[in-house]
Length: 138
Image (cartoon, rainbow, N blue to C red; front, side, top):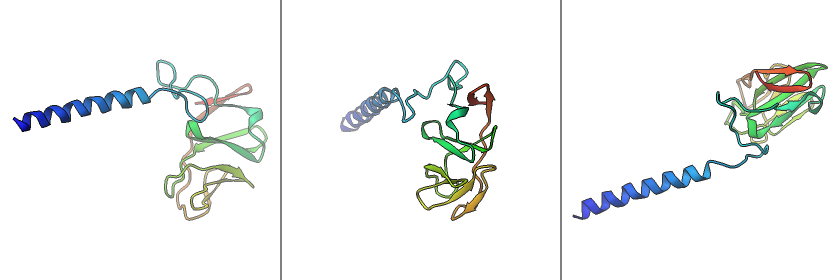
């Protein structure tokens, strides 16, 4: 009889945990959005405005998992904000490089290539499109 009671407790505990996790899934992230998009799962609205991205620099959108750069005037690039060394989130764009705070890996703003280790792999590119002043996932 104790085996049945134990299974019942484990099943009830699992159901409670699932309900709690589901309840915690809503809300907003660091960028102030819900992380959900339209019916196809794409995020709604633009990621950024072209004027938000400095020439020769960039902006990390931590809540979106992306960093957008503007290596040359009018040329916009985007990369994953997850460092290829240890998976930390990059924190800033400085002096023409994307910087990871964990171990100081640096990546080129024009192509995501490694400019300084310990990372050995480039940041993966992310598809974006620019329409007027809006930058969105492509």
